[in-house]
Image 1 (cartoon, rainbow, N blue to C red):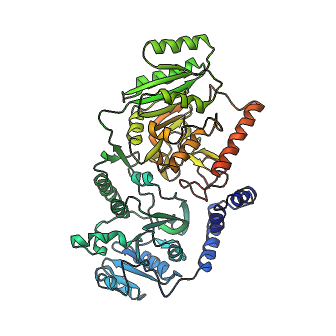
Image 2 (cartoon, one colour; image 1 turned 180 degrees about the horizontal axis):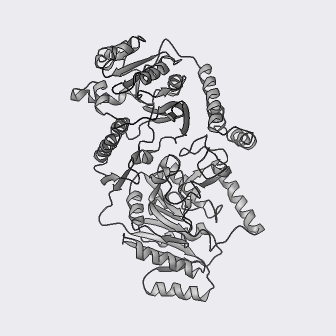
Image 3 (cartoon, one colour; image 1 turned 120 degrees about the horizontal axis):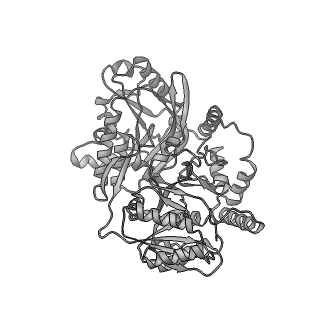
Length: 571
C-alpha cells in the first residue's frame, strides 16, 4: 500500500481520489494492526523485486559483543542470518568472536577485516554498488526483510539511509518510533535517526589522505551522529533517505556509555558549527543540544508588525509584554489600525505613538489579514520582520533573540514559536501539512511541559510551515516570494501558503520551543459564525487543496502512519 500511495501522489487527480475515497476505509490503527500492515507491505515489496546476484550491493553490519549476554548476542546474529537478502557481512568486535564466526562464513572478526574489504573484487569505491555499513547493538534484532528493503531503496546517489524502529521489553514489542524524513535541524537537536542507519563507505574515502583506510575512519568516528556530521562536512547536500518501516527492534538495556557519547556528540557538533554558532549547550533534554547561532554586529533591526481592530486590552497586554520581557532591544513596533471605531482603543493607540512605543499606521480598507501585513512590510525599516497577532503575550525573554539568530541563517526561511493557550496547553508547535486534509497544528492541546511524540515538543526542528501568529522572516525573502496572498487567502492559511512558497524557493522553515508566548487565539477576529465567513473559509481550504494538494500530501516532517484526522501526533 505504501508504494501504491507513493505512485498515486505523483498523479494529482488520482491522489486526491485515493485520499478522498480510500483513506476513510476501516483500518486497524493499533500498534499491532500497523505491524501486520507493514509486514504485508514488506512481503509485497521483497516479492516484487529480486536481488541482482550478478551485481549485489554488500551491506556491512558491525556489532560490539563486549559485555553482552551470550543469549542476546545469539539472538541478534540469528536475526541477521535469517535475512532473505544474502549479500551481507557481519563484523564482530570484542573477545570470543571466534565461536560466533563459525555460525556463518559471512561473519568476521573486526580486526581482520581490512584485507577482506580492500579487495577490488569485493569492494570498489568507484562502483555504483559500493557497500553500505551500519551498526547493530548486541541484543537488538532486525526485521527479516530489513536488508532486502534497504537494498531496494538505496539508489546510486544515496549517502545515508535510516529506518523506523520499535522497542523490545522482554518478549513484547512496543513504542514504535515513526520518524520524519531527513530533518536537518531536528538532527542538530538530537540523534533522532538512531538505530539501523546505513552509510555509504564513499563518505569515509577522503581520509585516505591522512593515512586512514575507510574502515578505520568510520570506526574512529565512534557514533552514527558523528559519522553523519562527517558526511555533512564533506557535502552539505548529503542525500539522506528515510525508509518508513519498522525494520529494527531495540532491546531495553542499560548503556552506561550513552551519556558520555552524547557529550562527545555535542563536542563534534560544536566543531562542525564553529564558524556559525557561538556555542552548543545541553538542550531542554539531557539527550538534546541547543545551538546558539551567531547574530551579526551591529544587531539587525527587527520590525514587529501587529495588526488590530479595536482590542485595547489585547494590544496593551501584547505591547507591554514585548517591552517588559524582551531582552533583544533593536526593534520597532508597527501597529496597524484597521478601521478601529472604539474611542478608548483609538486614544490608547495615539498615546503609544506619541510615546514612541509604536509607529501607528492606518489601513482604511475592509479586514484582509494578508493585505494588512503586506501594507505594513512596505513601511517596515527592519531587515527582519516578525508578524505578531495582537492577542499574543510574550513570556520568554529570549524569544526575539532566538528568532533573529535563526532568521539570520542563510538557509532558513520562516521561524515559528511555541504558542500556548492561556490554560497552559499547546496551541501551536509547528504546522503539519495534510492534517484534516489541509493543514493543522502539531501536538495541539498537549499540557505545557510535555515532551511530545519522540520528544519533539522539546526540540528545534524543521516543519513545512509555522503560524503567522508569531512568525519571523527576512524582509528580502518575504518580498522575494510575494508576501502573503491577499487575493485568495484574506484570513486563513496565508501563513501556510507563505511557508510553502519559502520552502519552494529553497529554504527550510523552522520551529523552536525556546520561543514561548501565550496566544489568546482569534479573540479580536471572532469565529466563523456567519454564512459569508463559512463560504470564505471553504474557498480558502479549496484554494490550498487545489494549489498545494494538501488533501493528498504526506508532510516530510510527519509520517504516513500517523493520523491526519487529529492534531495530536498519534497513530
